Image (cartoon, rainbow, N blue to C red; front, side):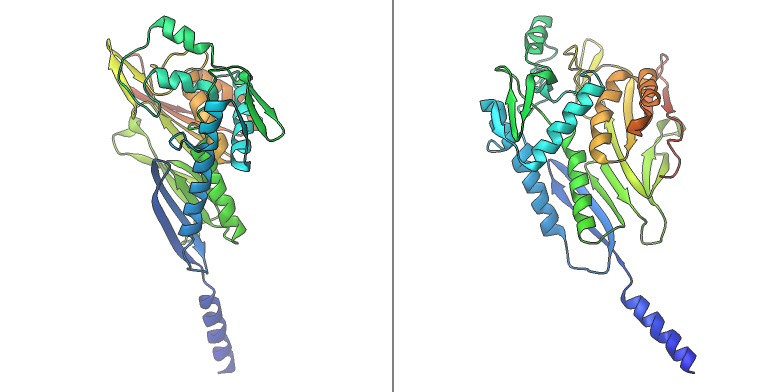
Length: 326
């Protein structure tokens, strides 16, 4: 009888400390966010999470005239906060590795093509307009001096949209860890970072659409750590002369991408890395992109390309081990 009572006491104690599955969701940074985590404390963390979004917006949002990035674009000099400094340093690192294929100084070109804050549909820019704008593009035109960010010449402007959402996912993940939460899945506009397991004690599952196997068919990435980001040419684009021009701009040539890639999904140790490299991997194309991953094993990148072949058929290729559990 005592043994039974002891067992019941243990079961009650364990149950009282059981973690509950909690979901926080909403809108921020012009997109959605969904955060799932396990915690014994059911007090909502949403106010603090939304506070983090606002902090990052005050640093990196092009839609806020008072943000640090907007002030830099106007004046050419700004004292960076921790958010901006982390993102700029990472962006410059990725620019060097990709030889400028990822470049946050691409903003003048993004604006020229009509994909910026003030969108327009003026069609493909003239070759002269592209050449003129390219004079202001190049990551070498930025100088980091202690906490200062400076531009080397007028006309240089930056756009961190190709890396900021991934960074935001990482910031929220670190916040959850600081609260003792070690099982979570953070999704900010499709830039995800995961750790631990879900409420069933299984790895977090992330659906990856594989069009080659039929519309709506998904395979699952099973994740206990790491991040995943997806970039595509199917959301923001315009058609002209039988060619589809998408919002991804090549900083080297000034051209809007018009290759055969539909989406590329990238895995990496953290979301800021996955988010930054998905842009470069779209521009590299399928074969060169997969070669890049093989040639840079220290980056620990993976990629799944969905693309159209020469006959217009939807195909896919992916790096070795892409669908292995992380």
